[in-house]
Length: 279
Image (cartoon, rainbow, N blue to C red; front, side, top):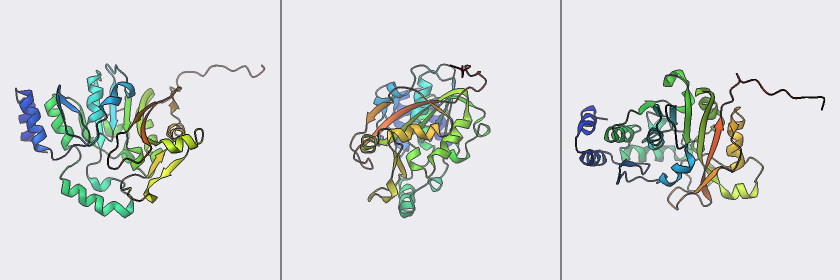
C-alpha cells in the first residue's frame, strides 16, 4: 500500500473526500463497514446488524485482537467500543490460505486478478477513520503473545475456522494469546440442518466434498462450535449463543447461519472452590 496515499487520506481535512479517495483506490472489500457516518464500503458481506449482539458494548481500556482481520471490520468495531489498543492479524499473501486442493489454483488466480491484497483495505479504512488500530502480518498458525506484543484481554475470531484444516489448533493459538481471565468471541458459520439433526453431538460437515465449495473445510453444528474451544481448555459461556441468519449470496450454503459463542480462558490463579467429598 502506497504510504504517500495513506498519508494524504489521513491528513485530508475533508473527511468525505478522504473516504472517496480510499474507495477509489481499493478494488474490492470483503466487509461492508462504515468509514464515516453515512459512508460505507461496498462489501461482499454486510454483518453490521450482528455487532450489537455479538460484541460487548463496552471494551474501554482493553487490549483487543482481531484474528483474520482482512479489512478490519471487527478491529474497528472494537475500537468504536472504547478498546485501548487493537491489533488485527491476517496472512500476508493469499498463498498462505488453506485452500481446498482441488480449488487452490483457481482461487489463487482469482485473488491475483482481483488485485485485492491482505491489509490494503485495513490501512485505507484506518486512514479515513483516523484509527490507531494496527495491522500485523501473522498467520494464525504462528500466533503467539510475542508476535503481537503481549497477551490480550479480548479477541474476536471472525469466520475463519471454517477455512482451516485444523480449527482446534488455531483456537489453541488464540487461547495462548489471552491473558488468564481474558475473553473471546467466536463468530462462525454453522450448519442449521446439522444442529437440528444432532443438537447435543459435536459434528461438522466436511465441505471439500460438496460440489461448488471453493473455500471451506469444516462447517460445524452449534455443539461442535462449542466443543472446539472446550477441547482447548477454554470455558464456553452458559446460555444460548446469538444466532444470525446469513442473507442469500454466493458461497453461502443452504441452512448456513452465523453463531457468536463467548469463551473465557480460565484464571488458574483463582483457587477452586472446595468440594465436600463426604456429602
